[in-house]
Length: 449
Image (cartoon, rainbow, N blue to C red; front, side):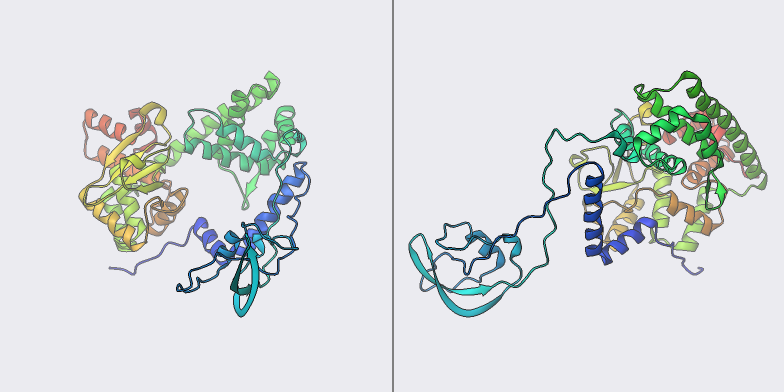
């Protein structure tokens, strides 16, 4: 067996590692960011809490003579500070207490007329507490000029009913790019630009570059379709019919070009015959990455579940823990694991579905959970998507040109085609893949000579 390769950490994993190493710096940075954001939105600067004068000593509850004196901690002092106190000083704010050292010195204080003796704890200084932002009056009016374009559009898209998480994420990510290309970080400027000057918007998007290369045809098509989606869903965003038609024309043209490019690419891949069978692919994964890593588990899960990039699975114990639109892995005791898919691209047509996993992959999952110390309510792969991970896998395996997670669907469809599957068998596979037979023939079948 060749040397086992390790896939580099994803951006999310690198970010988590950096955050864990710099928690305090990140807390201060976020605090400053949200403070400036509220100021930019028209709210007054936050008012720090006023520190109160410390009291010389604090009372404790009396204890029986035979009982040992309880250890005095910052928490117990804060609780006892709620008792009525006869003192000339005001009560110290609880935020000013820190880990303390005990000075064996006795003083007297009075609680409800009872004199007690106690060990006095002298407070040590604590870092200045983070300022508390006071709640603003409800009649504060924020100008549209100061609303973030991405924040507003995210709110609009997320509020549309019956949208899947995948579609919401896809559109929000697309608008991030559009806003960056158009250089309109504020909502009013963004809406003004897309409604008043579509010609400039179209030119800017088509000529934009990322890392020295122009965006792919299908990416540009997606950006124009997202703009049309926003205009269709929110008719209050006014745009002249002839200007809206410019976006529609571009969508039609780019859709045609994208199909042509796809056909050419598919034909080239068919001629080279480079797509392995699913079993050949799994053998390559084992040879390159081994059987205990996430790469082999991902490939096996896709083979059984036949999903898209939808295996962002929350690990739970029972079906009763399936409470929202997340996708879930149910695993408990010696039973076979079960996967519940509540969110995916074609859910409106096919609905949510469950898949009971085989005993072999259930055992594989148990081993993976143990090795990676994954608990209930954690996510199986701790990432927002598997496309980046699978893309790196494919590159390491030399299986390029077929997409990332889509390579699994193409291999399944091609295996079916090569085996001479009947129309009924092809229909069954299409149902499992949650697409039509026409889609399978057009998009996924890549024959190998």
